[in-house]
Image 1 (cartoon, protein in one colour):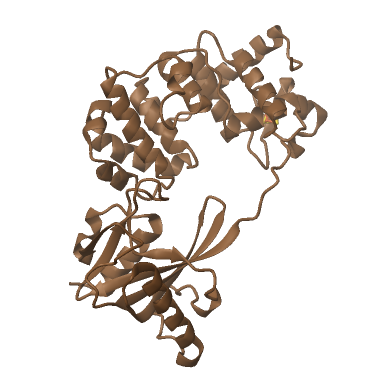
Image 2 (cartoon, rainbow, N blue to C red):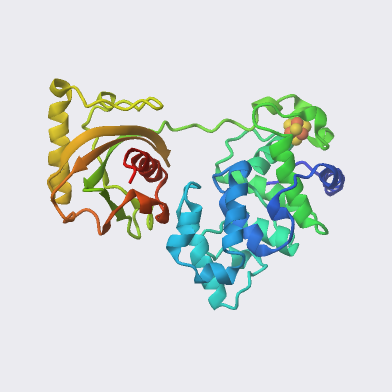
Length: 385
Ligand code: SF4
């Protein structure tokens, strides 16, 4: 059995100071205005991998359009994805839609037991604890990025936090810390203290209400803890993307279930790591990219046309290099080189399933991947109707 060095009495004192601090300093956030589990669940899913500041406008727009579980369950997945556009990690949007449908079929209510909540799509142990404690006042523990750092410092825990032993000791402290009488406030206080005071690089120990209980502070090692995660450098990959034009319309295709970006629209794109990225540099702001230097680029342009033809069974003629984006997806650093091309083909025979020719004026009606939207906006500006 792994244990920490806090007595029950010391934890009582620590909790009292923490709650008194929270009553004075708590952040005002839109999802804290009520104990509605729907709002709390929505905010917690949006906050996964995303900052509070980025989430607030999405949360408000989403709630205005889908104010409750029943309305969300009846919505088209495409509409849910469209409102999610730009937040990234789209499996979260598909999961909330599936969860809403599941819960409505089961009577339209969230369970209050964390053991039942974790059975729902997209809800892990932390999110279950957050919903159970914030909405239903269940004394369920939480461990997420901010609280994990705070607990590690309170304990002066000097092991990597990702190991099974570390996770066990952090969850154990979280379970001992949560207040039996004000569990929601206590967990929110821990999150606020972690994000506002016990910050990663420069903890503000002089403003910390639990300083005298903090083992790292007492040992003077708070700046060294928790141990930095070993970062694996992202793998560089190159994707090519073709804005394929026929007259004034462009070919869009929709990613299918099981594909990355499932349900979203995009321009045909594929991975090709043979193309030298530095031949097609990032577009300088407001500066159009000139047609490539023939001697230098021509062999690569025809290689791209041939690759497209092999992959999608349609001949194209590249017209110009439009833009190059750099973006990160999970562990990949993607360089996305986008071209405009023309074709006489009416459709692509393979490599994409749902496809349609679409005028730029209709782009706003489609949910795009983030880079797909940036390219769509660029085409809308360069092809005004
Ligand atoms: S004393 Fe400093 S390191 Fe310890 S919990 Fe407070 S802010 Fe974090």
